[in-house]
Structure formats: structure tokens, C-alpha cells
Length: 235
Image (cartoon, rainbow, N blue to C red; front, side, top):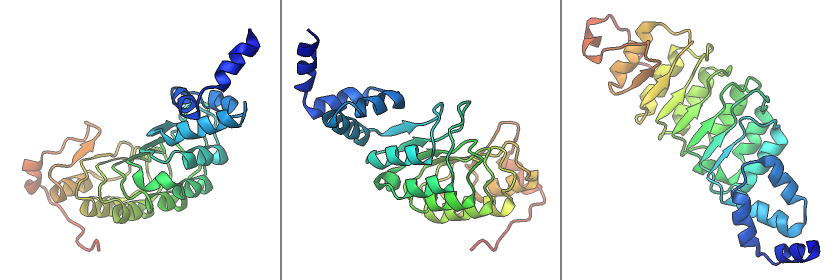
């Protein structure tokens, strides 16, 4: 009976196997399936090529495992590498390897929330090639204005950015980003060391901009009543 079942599974075409594997959310299950035989390995590879979203949040992953999986996800649009209780870790080297993947120019959303092992070096390498990026979460990281400068120059379609507790980002980086990214709709600035006057100036540059969290209340109609000193040399 067991041999007959094995024979039935062996007759499944690779396309059908890949559709089945596409339903699996566990990277452990995918790894085990990939080790069964060459045909199953092809099915797993094809299933990755069909994925539009990958989330490593909640998984114990490293540079090598993340980079290898992303390399096979040719149409990937949403990449989540947020840190969680299982300490999904990635370094600048991992971000560089991801930046070389074929899907990088398709990515619309990237989350690096809480990944403390990355610096401007890795983030800059990533965003320079992620030219379709619309949503970026770098909250809880140690990036500086240098990352925002690269982001502003490379990602004109950016709509939202989370800078939660990015305490090394200053007014200069925020001004440059808002001026260059004309489609920017919202910025999360919770926990940043930036004065209120800076936020008022940002809304002056882009009146439709939403500055979060809600505790930061800025009335664009009243902005003209404030003594604002705009940074004009942003080129």
C-alpha cells in the first residue's frame, strides 16, 4: 500500500508539486520537501518563484538562508525580515546579497524592523537597487541620515516610512527625504530625537504629509503662525 502511494506521488508533475508547496508557510517544511528528491526540489524552487510575499518574522534565519530563498523568489514584491522573539538576524552582508537578487527592482515593501545588526552600509546597498519601493520599515535600527539620502535619491515612489526610534536620524535627513520623495504620504517618527519645529516645517513642504504617531498634532492651517526656519540648501 505504501509503495503504491509513493508511486502515485511520483507521477505528479512538477507544476502541480510547486502549486502544493506554494501553500506551505513553514520554511522548515519547504526545506524538508526539498531534500526528498530532485523532482521535489524543483517543485520547491518553482513555488518560491511564484511567491509575491516572504516573511521571515518569527523564524530563526541568517544571511545565507534568507539570501538563498529571496534569490529564487523572482516576482517578490513584499519582503519582511523583522526581528521577533526567535531573533531573525541579518547583517549588512545579507542585505548586500539580497540586493543582487533578480526581484530587487520589483520590491514594493521592505520591513527591517528591529534588526540591530545592520548599518547604513547594508541599507544603502539595498535601497539603491529597490527602485520600485513604496513602503519601508526601518524602525528600531541604527541608521543615520545617510540611508535617507540614498533612499530619497533612489526610490521616487516611496509612500510610507517607519523611523520608529531611529535616534541617529536628524532634521537634515527628514527634510531631504520629504523634498525628494513627492509621493510620500506618511512618516512614523515615534521615539526620534527631532524637535516639533522640524515636523511643522515638513508639513509646510508637503501639506498632505501625515506625521505619526497621532500624539504629534500639526494643523497645516496654523503653520504660518509658527516661526519656521526651513532648510533651503537640500540639493
